[in-house]
Length: 140
Image 1 (cartoon, rainbow, N blue to C red):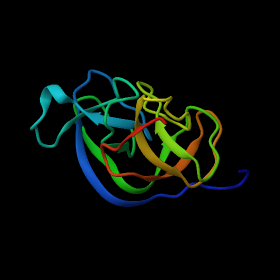
Image 2 (cartoon, rainbow, N blue to C red; image 1 turned 60 degrees about the vertical axis):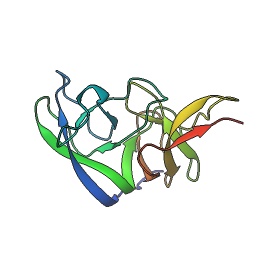
Image 3 (spheres, helix red, strand yellow; image 1 turned 90 degrees about the vertical axis):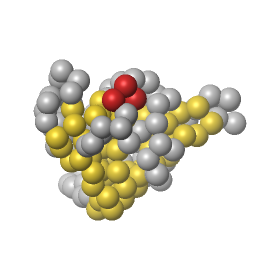
């Protein structure tokens, strides 16, 4: 969309700590590190695969060893792994922390992220109305 600027309307912001050894880029999906469950704020990292539950989206670069803001509800800006159109279902693209519109195959599970509210090309910013954290979808 030429000249269109994505906007956010977060419904819930939470803190997350990055102890991965590397910075996590802005607008990336993150999961809660299951090894450190129970820590507060939770330790977050990029998804280990496309089938792990998603906690939220980074809102700014999350530096290693730092606490940062994670959007977990509402309309948030994500980074697209593929070209996505408005109204399409968005899923986790796995370890890149980006979103995709590639639906799960028959009997397969994927982390369901939400619905796109704007269009984006590869590596572009896309508005996504986020699903409940941890949502999953199985292909028909």
